[in-house]
Image: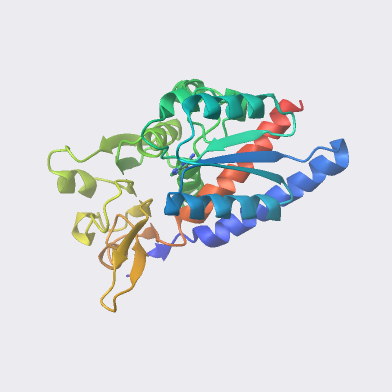
Length: 288
Ligand code: GUN
């Protein structure tokens, strides 16, 4: 039996329609337009694609997009000064500094200089703490998008064993916190986990966020399990081109799983939709 496909592209499109409705209502009722500032330092090609796409989607739902592109020679002091200016700007409700930053910049220092109320990535240490203690936090967009897909498919996640492969601050750790918040039994696995295959075979839900192309084969998946693939890896094709693949081997996993979020078209579109949703949330909180 072929797995049910968790269609993040369609889900995100519906979510953006809802967000556009909220944006229009905010404008009509209070004359406010939510604004998202995105800061890109350097020329990383993948980051440039993401930032362009974020700006386009922001405008499409009727919000204001402020894009700041800085050279990779930018000093930490200049970047911190820009963030201070955005923190103080009442037209900016959300601030996102695209990662990774060039090596001479201290990412933790930069992220923690963002006003936590405008931290739509949910990376500021105070949002991390709020999420970890079950309080009202800004929640990181990629894990939030995964959670929405899982809730939409399963309804309640209570009692399910979720194995999150990957322990990054951006995906793995906040994903585990969110699943715990939905009463899953959560295991965080990673590159040093002993017998990763045996661990993943126990999972009702597998979230793969390791950044290694097609690393999870179908014979690691318990029949009927749900697989959410967070990976975005570009691999060479036989005809000399390239194509995007995830962290799971799609065909063999889809043959065993009950449901699977594909790459592309699964988690990716959800991430940007959640960023827009977080910006509207930040705007609403800022304006009572
Ligand atoms: N780089 C890769 N993913 C992300 C993300 O979700 N937010 C930011 N700011 N940078 C990223």
